[in-house]
Length: 147
Ligand SMILES: [Zn+2]
Image (tube, rainbow, N blue to C red; front, top):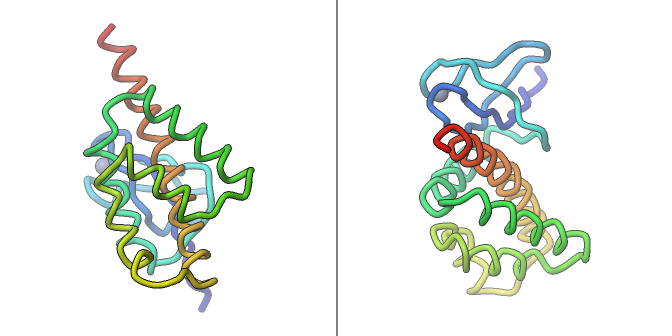
């Protein structure tokens, strides 16, 4: 049996972002509240990535308070990736702005990074960018509707 692809979705009802299996051509229901959700652009993942996705989502929800900060961070991340900066350096920069994400760091600081670490970090960074983008958009919408 083929393993289901897990894709990031954004719920229009509870405003959460989740990594969940979505069948092609189906509007997903939010894993948390059952509301209609939209698939976010980006990579596909596996069930093993759900726990870290949830932690990144929770951290961004706590730490990101303005769309402007989110956009600035995204621009920095894009630049760092296109300049092929070391993923650990990129992450350290993000943690300055979003300190709750520091849970991604400790394992790396104790020993030299392996190829496997770098692959995992690159995947986590991609997840983070997807979540930051979606959260920034929600914050913009909220600001526009209260203006
Ligand atoms: Zn929901």
